[in-house]
Length: 189
Image (tube, rainbow, N blue to C red; front, side):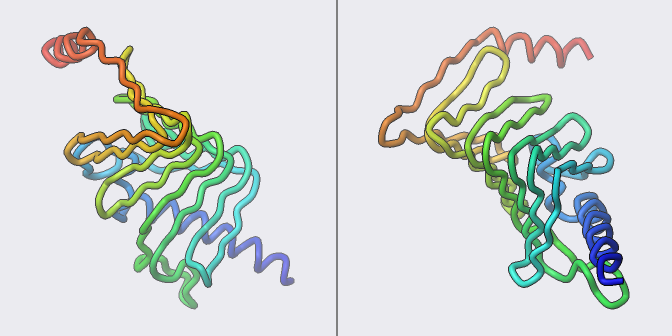
């Protein structure tokens, strides 16, 4: 009987995270610059899911892929930190809010605007800021890219800050053609 309760709890956790990702500010991770409402449901696939209620996070482990619309994150591990109770006696999750998302190990982000690779990604929904870290962290848009040991992307205003590390320097390659092509695409719509 205990095994069924654990399984039901995990299913409730997954449902709560999917519902929360659609209604809480964390949905900004899966929207375009400037935040806003998410486009469609969020799906998270992993080999294993472990809820840590005392520490207030859910841990997705092994070949993790989180997808919503045209935005995806793949990593070895994804931790979703939250406030509130995922498992209330009434089974509700309306009071749950995602406060932080951390992706660890071989992190790859793919969106319509950019691609990114890092050892670690941390996203804070309240500020709509992504922080990528690792000796070879890189963000690519078209043929342009920036790399460094720490890259901070503010999704609300588009500001990016790259920092060097002990063994690497910041590197940027900017192709003006990317902006021209982007402008032509917008004018053609």
